[in-house]
Length: 97
Image (cartoon, rainbow, N blue to C red):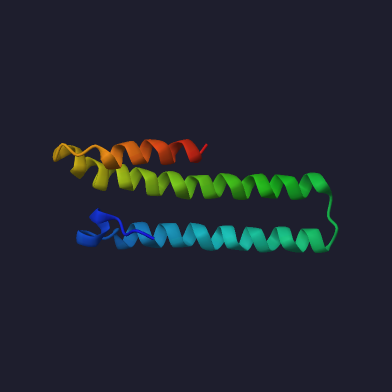
């Protein structure tokens, strides 16, 4: 796993880290809730609605990280006429659909 060049010299803010971790803990709780719903043989539509909510929440975490990456790493690279991280971010954004 490669470290972000920007994060090496200027890590994510404490506020951003706290926000992301809070969101991920909530998602973890939602996943546990779905597991319990499966164990309890709950109605399929109810389970699927919860799965959809989890997917949306994970996508939002991804968008937050992508936004931070664009505003820091990619922006810095563009200022230095290096477009590699921009191309990489565009490819990654395709996976966040």
